[in-house]
Image 1: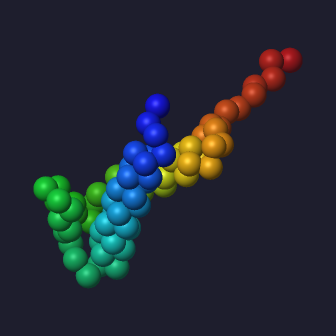
Image 2: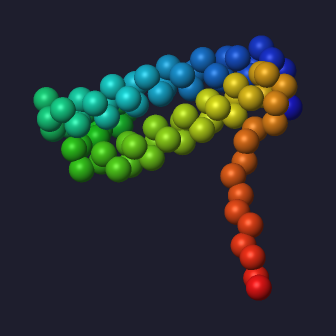
Length: 84
């Protein structure tokens, strides 16, 4: 497992990436642009669902890293299905 310094570095990296993903999403959503470039990837208005999923995944990763820094276990969702 990574030490706290590495976890903080990963957390900052993901926060910066999340900021850029949100900017791309808003730019495409506002209709001010029809395409948006993020690093070496080009997105179009039709990529909004993919971009939304990437944002949600990044938010989840950030939550998990913050939990590790606070010495908490990452939160995992699960369901219980009754078989009566």
